[in-house]
Image 1 (cartoon, rainbow, N blue to C red):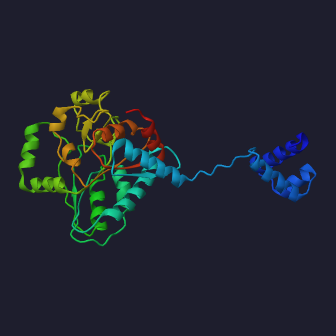
Image 2 (cartoon, rainbow, N blue to C red):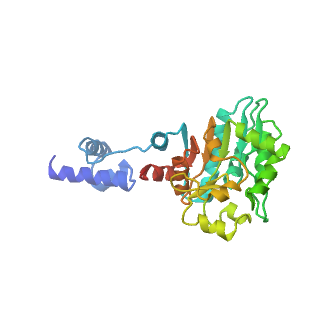
Image 3 (cartoon, rainbow, N blue to C red):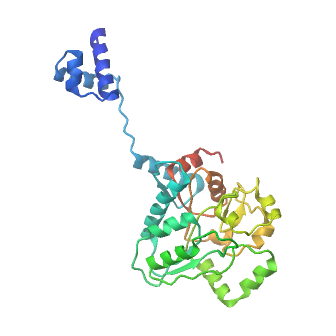
Length: 314
């Protein structure tokens, strides 16, 4: 292609693709006809001067899901396309995606175990009513607080019960007690025993991940002694069902774990659907540790967190 013509082809391409001029405007600027501008733009593509890439966000999400499923041997990965990598925004999108997934999988006679917290509350408010029979909803861990901080446990259970036409079963206990003997006494009560047993039997467990930070919900409930806190900071990457673990998915503090009321990690691993709902910049390390520990077989997260998890070295 002669130099002068090439120059006009490149100029036409820049005006059209970079500056959003229309073909009539470009024709006027270059002193040529509109059909000539059209030919210039075709030439720009055929000669490789312009390369057009279409980024389909759905295709990218599917690719991320497949990679994560393979990397962590997961049954399913559901990725919410959040507009920003900020915790309060991401929770809304995770809630919506998780509610859609539950609507897809919940069936007659299921036992659904739920935990509490703001992420699970966002799931609960997005639930659609599904006309299923003999579904049970049960609380998987204690949620009675020693402070005025709201755990949303009651609201979550109410909304899950409403969605699946059942009366939910509350676990009216703190998540963590001071002494093992106190825990043993509570678990010996026949009513508590029945609820804990039902949690173990649940085929669907849905939970989120807590961070090891003073502003984390669990840390605001007054459960921890200074000794407990010292054993967690710098060692634990997060908690699931108020049980703390490290980056390899190993329990961080056996004494604290023994004083925790509710489902344990081994029982979570046996579920048909063990669903971890978590995302955001503060939860990447925790999610990674949870997946290494195989506490979940389904992950609901956002596309930013998914990308970080894929790039993170095993």
